[in-house]
Image (cartoon, rainbow, N blue to C red; front, side, top):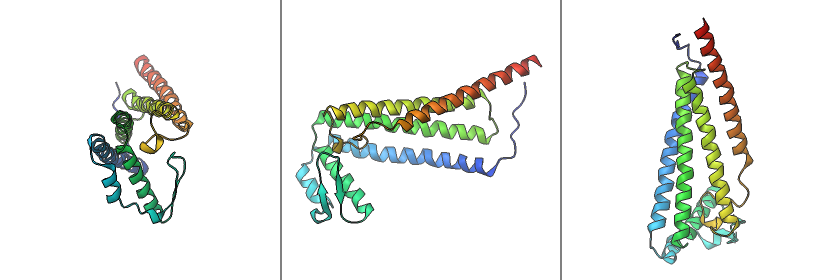
Length: 214
């Protein structure tokens, strides 16, 4: 049995390892923030009128607002547009029936959980790569796990798109449901990672067999 000797770390690998850790913790913080806001909005019984009045959305800044969620255009800077859009989405969300709010809450929590898991396994993968464990089975399996998680994210988005298409959940109320079919790029990324993990796993198996024969 051969030992894995840690090679001289390349700066790019070390940098990617640090970036993976940053992305992981950023994903946790962002997910916690979004989850808290949605959870509060789900259980909140505040009057939508009072919330709208307290909102910073100024009618003079709104040029055109189509409540079908397809077109929302504002005057002003991009940051203000984004802020206004979030405020409108939140107000529309908390004014929805509790059943729709729960549907949006659980689907969003599921997607956020999958994203956090993706960043976790990516962090673990980069940590093993940083240690020089390139072609080990437990290293490569992280890639396969990420490919499955990305596929699950696409499936959740696809199911959410079906809900939206049938009018079960209005797109304006939702923080992650889009008006269009989920991006095929997620499927391509998932398939690519799965193929890479399969090839690397086969290489790792051949390496083990070679070591045993020697």
